[in-house]
Length: 347
Image (cartoon, rainbow, N blue to C red; front, side, top):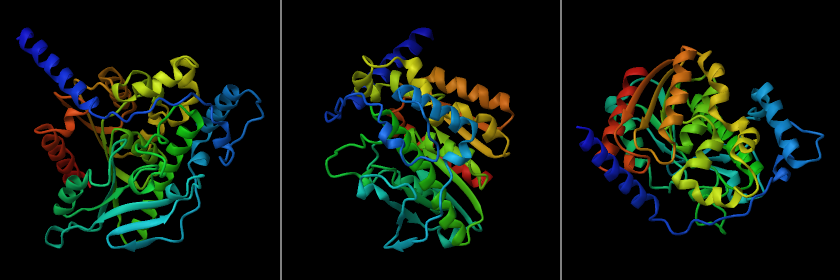
């Protein structure tokens, strides 16, 4: 039996490596503290050293994170040809990124189950056609779905990019800014859903989208039902150890250690908001994989253990595949079943 397990593990690792290395357009970008990206944040520091400044800002955010993730509600919501659009409350120097796009999937009338809706957050570098099947499946069960284009992705990608490199990168503060923008854009989507009369609200996040979803839910008690597909502890550990972020590590590892990186990315790491999340009495579903080479299983186990200790109401499923292979047959169908079944039963 042990020989079979080892053989299966080798096959899964090889499949993961094949899928992860199909993309040949990853760019190694130089390390940058990026403190200019912090100019418009609602926190500031008098420290002159860039690392010390970002550590101080992280300390302030963790002390009052609601202030950091607060925002003025958008006033220009518009639904055009099945797409919700509005101006992001977070303005960046990239104009395309400042307009939020979210594909609207109204619940099928025959199976409509009250005023229920979820926001779906795709994975890092997802293109506009991905996660559509999941949204259609959710809508088919009578729950409206809104698929958000993440900052710097698809419709929001600056013309000089081919990948969503500005969402997660070797630029420390820009990565924080993109995360803050994602969380705020998500919360603004729920403002629109409430305006449209939806009452029971949930969220589904995958990979990077799962990180954004957790941060949003930890700061918004409207999100009663949560699905976190892939989960991890700290932003820095994922970037440092993940197969899909090797090019980012290559750009930063000669300038900073992982311990120091954790300190400057503390404010966007889900592990620091577990107690805040658990205090709101939500229903949550966590899913991770045994052979994940991006969100390492040891980090997933750690955060699930902390969720358990917090007393949060949660369900856990562990699939025998990896990060990339979850998007392949048969695992994508198994994962999709678990997600929609949890939403049907709990939203």
